[in-house]
Length: 151
Image (cartoon, rainbow, N blue to C red; front, side, top):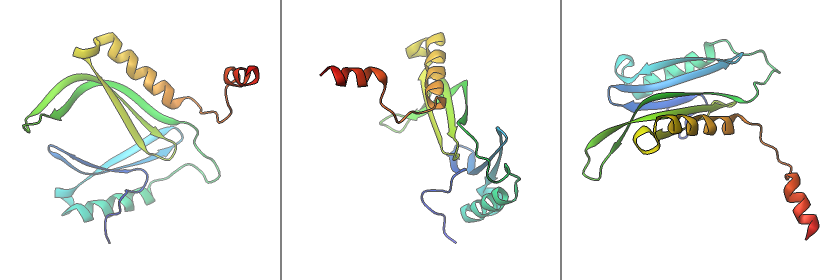
């Protein structure tokens, strides 16, 4: 077996410092159950990936025919890291927002406390998260329709 690219929904690769493995997530009834499968403990990347797939198939899920609406997300304060052009690893204080859609696909954003200020960084993350959770309408807005009719 080969590790597919892209990874299946609900499985992400984590290669950050000492954390190296696959994180598997299952959503059921608005709750997220997750487990990390370490490369080192399971004997390599392929073994960890196979264990994550096996675990996801065994964990109970929501009954068939019932789809979860929206998604799941949270905001927390933490450290973000980046590498400079010279390869030096640097950290900065930030508010980080995470969101997983109904299919389990993750997305995130962060705002630095030094650049935005404590309350503004938190506010921006919460606004981003609310925007991700809001239902998307495919119909044009009334303002746009009224403008088009006036033309």
